[in-house]
Amino acid sequence: MRLNKETFKQYKQYPEKVLQFGEGNFLRAFVDWQIDKMNKEADFNGSVVVVQPIEFGLVDKLNEQDGLYTLYLEGIKDGEAVKEHSVINSISRGINPYKQHDEYLKVAENPELRFVISNTTEAGIAFDETDKLEDKPQKSFPGKLTAFLYNRFKAFGGSKESGLIIIPCELIDRNGEKLKNIILKYAELWNLGEEFVAWLNSANTFCCSLVDRIVPGYPRDRIAEITKELGYEDNLVNVAEQFHLWVIEGPQWIKDEFPVEKAGLNVNFVDDMTPYRTRKVRILNGAHTALVPVSYLYGLETVGQSVDHEVIGKFIKGVIYDEIIPTLDLPEGELKYFAGAVLERFQNPFVKHYLMSIALNSMSKFETRDLPSLLEYINRKGELPKKLVFSLASLIEFYKGKRGEEDIKLADDADILDLYKTAWGSYDGTEEGLKTVVTTGLGYEKNWKMDLNKVEGLTSAVTGYLAKIEKLGIKEALKEVM
Image 1 (cartoon, rainbow, N blue to C red):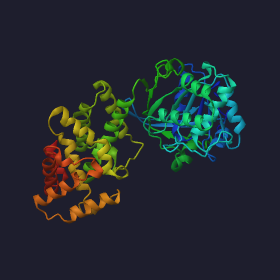
Image 2: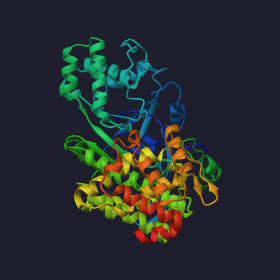
Image 3: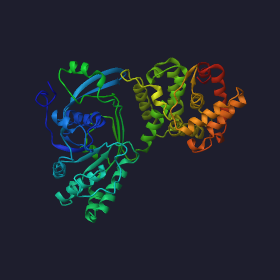
Image 4: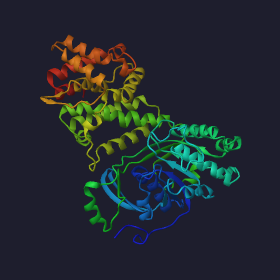
C-alpha cells in the first residue's frame, strides 16, 4: 500500500499560497512541516506548489504520493529523548519547469499566491548572463523567478496587491538582498521596463533569513523497519531533529499572514538578523570547534559522548556559558535558552555526530567561530578566556597528528598541514622549542587575518597549556583549567 490521498484518509486540499523552489529533504522537513502545523493549529489554510529548480529531481515522486510524505522528528524535546512521526499534508503538487513551463508560469496568475520560498543550495543564488527571458526555463533560479514575477506583474497590471513575500533559505549571508539585486540585474538585462522595477521595489517584500535544523534525510539504512512500522510504502520518508529555528528579517505585519506564533513555532521576525547569525556561529558552531581537539585528544569519538562526559561536558558548558555568551549582545535569557537547546541537540541519542567529521579545516573554523569570542572576551573582561585558550593549545597539539600512538587523519589545506608538519618536525622537546611551535601557529596571518602573537599574554598562555598537555597528557592538563 502506497501513501497517497486515497490511503491517507485525513487528506485535505488547501488554496495554493506558497511557491517553493526546491523539493529536497531540508525544505520538506522545515518549511513544509511548519506550513502543515500552521494549517492544523493556526488556520493558515494554504498549500505549497513545489518547483523543481533543476531538470532532474523529486517532483514526480511527490506527485505520485499527492504531495504527501512521512516526517520523523528524532531528538531531545522538553528534556526527553523523543522520536515521533506524522504525515505532512501541505504540498498540493510539484512542477518541473523543464517539462511544464507553461504550467509553471500560470501559477503566477493565481491571486491567492502570497509567498515565495527557496533553498537551491548556496550556489543557487547566482547571476547567469546567458539566461534570456524567452528561455523555457532559464538556467538559474533567480532567472526563473524573474520571469515568473514578470508574468505576475503583467497578469495583474502591476497592482500593489499582487506583490509577493519572498523568503530565501539558502545558507548565504544577506540572502534576500542578494536575490533581489540579481533579479533587478535581470530586469535591466532583459529591458523589462521601469514600471516592472518600480513594482518589484514597492509591491514585493524580500526578506533575509537564517534557518537551523539538522536534517539527515531519507533513512536508507532502516527503511524496511520504518515501512513495517508505518504499514505503508513511502518513497519520501524524511528524518530531522526536533530543534528548529527560523529567523526572518522583515516587517512584523508578515506574522498576520504567516501565523507562526499561533502555531507555537520557533520563528522570529526581526529588524536585523545579524546578532542571530552571530549567536548561531559563536555558540553552536563555536562550541563544536572548541570541543573537537580537547575531546578527541581526551579519547572520545562523538559529540554526544563529549557532552555526556563528566569532565568534557563540564568543559564545553563552561566555554559556552562563561566565555562565549558574555561576548554577545542579545538578551542573556535568549542566549541561555539557545545555548540550552544547542546542548540538547549535541546530546541527541538518535544522531552519531563524529568529532572527526567536524575536524575538517579546524584552523579556519577556529578563526571564524572562536577567535571573535576570544578577542571580544579580552576586550570586555581585560583577561584571557582560559577555556578557549586551552582549546587553542589543544588545537595546536591536535595538528601534531598523534593521539597517543595513534595517527590522527588531519584534513586541512596543504599549507596548514605543511606549516604544522614543519613546526612539529623541528620540535626538540624543550620549552623553547614548544614556544617556537606556538609562535609559528599563532603567527600564521593567512589563516588568522592577524598575528596572534601580538595579543598580550596569548603566546605565553598557549605555550603553558601546550607544555602541560605534552608533559602530563590532556586529562591532567585539563584539570588545571577546570
